[in-house]
Image (tube, rainbow, N blue to C red; front, side, top):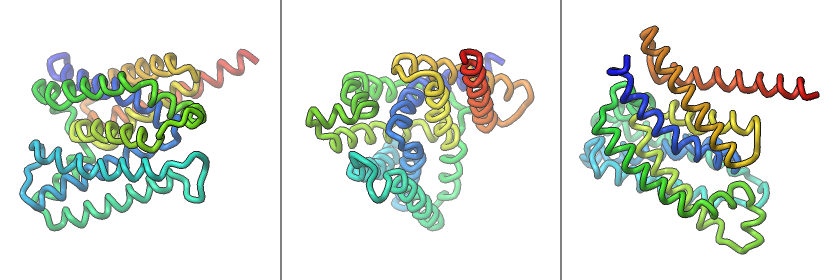
Length: 274
């Protein structure tokens, strides 16, 4: 098992390391589906690149995807409001997701290998991931993005968890939101081709949701999110190998099952305390 599943496990851990952290921001900001919207913007960029002869997986392909993600990041930054506006930002995110998906399907109908590119983005290929791919498309870019978020952690954490404090200090929140979503989109560009949209969304939201069940302290949130994600990934990979089941969907279901267990555990603890 170790020979076949070690590379996918390491890929899962790298995905978890950055997505579980970003998921805490996403839930705190209440923009749950921003991951899906940015992923579809990246997919739209990929398909647009196919129309002009850009090969999927090439460096120019990433340039096209990043350009479309930047448009999405700018839109989400500009539509942020200090309070609930007439149109909630989550509605804007949903509209961007739907329109980007429809546009990608239209372009895929005219682009060579367009349908295959869309399928790869949805499903991913984590079970077939190789060590060179892990190094080039996960470890190196995630290290750079991790340093970026570490250096700006005070700004990003304050805006996500204490927006009123950021407003009081007169920060240009929309500008900082743009940098946050742009870096978030860069993570999505590298992770979706390997994990697929469903798995990446799961890594982003479920560990953070589990953590928020038990605490609001950010350090504890991060620890709970990372530990729960590591356990769910390890269990999903083992079950996939043991019963010869599709890896990606099984990992997603494992995360869902762990969330249910965490919810029951929280209810039990509250009942016992009462």
